[in-house]
Image 1 (cartoon, rainbow, N blue to C red):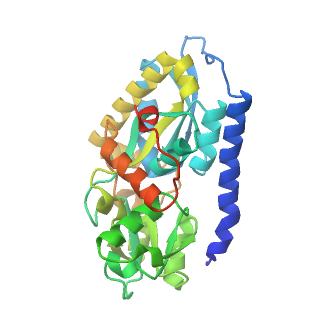
Image 2: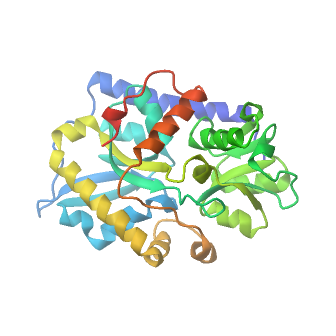
Length: 328
């Protein structure tokens, strides 16, 4: 399956419209100002927007282990396609918390959206060739290193976001000219097929699609997350500053429960793999072999700043970031 880069433009417009909707809700004061519903047992009901990927396994484990109920929270997990839908839903109060990749949150911060990170989400393993995200090529491809990606067609799931900025970073570090890369936007499930058919020269994928691709014979060229920063904070959990101001106890409880959840996930990889089948459709063989990311209990601020610098270098951010307002 192929897709010309131009086809991605309507997708980006939809994302921009989603952000504009969030801004409009802020300006009009339509965000949810309630203190939050409670259960008969006195627990605060919260809805968390997540993406059905490996990254969010800890929150599913945390709910199962009772970490959130211990903090007085009753959690409903709502799946979405990505941060483009989750960010405005959190801003408007539809969701109280959400998960998104770090660059998307930085872009939202640069646009003035009052978001607040409340917990670390997922991080690189720091090991090249053994990370949960990488650029893959066909086994007989002449592309042997990150430098060789210059001038090539590279598929990513989202244009002008964390995967393009980190691929650009590793290509430049290897001595290549990242400005000559032609990025093609494709959904993760379609990228391996596009590489195999030759519609693109390479593709950036994350688990489980990385294990699927390599299982079909594709070869890893570079681990773009680990190559950017071995401690790269790839995703984080967040809420709105409005919700923080009105529901400090719930926010504190969510942070504490997430810290327990990521620590539990890091210590129980077999339980992580088992719970994936409850919210994804990963093949059991892939589930057993995929590379799990790191789940730190704290945000690596230096790596977040680096992602901000990369986004600025690539022209994605034109206004100063307010990291003090965004980060915990």
